[in-house]
Length: 180
Image 1: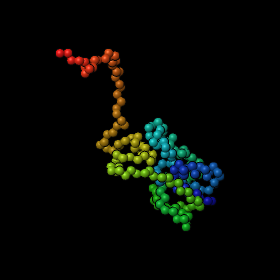
Image 2: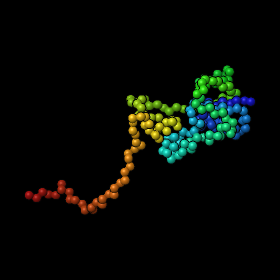
Image 3: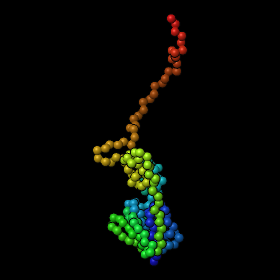
């Protein structure tokens, strides 16, 4: 039975696995992803999920059970460290140590990395990048380090009703002649 390895458990990787099954591929599919999360869509990380309007489940490409139901071997937290085209294997590193996966077909769906800023001060801890679910979670729950207290923004206090202003204009004293 042929094995299709997809390096990169991203939106592209998950959709590739879905397409393979939809088009009748009945071999083994191994989906390798370096993040501890199952494949998710990145745009919601900076929109609805970050703002707390969308649930965490809304960001994922497929429900957790989809992978087992479609016989996709999803390996989370596993990084491809080398590809040996001569032996048709990928070397991996992950929570259970180093390993090797043989393939008949290999798809690289590793995505991109955000550009890094290079101006003075861009290496400070206050400069943040939003690329992963973890990054978004840290923005949703800032400063969970001991000894630091953070607020999400200015405290909202009820506004007092404004006093009605008199429509009567005060004379502008600069334009009155001085009587002497």
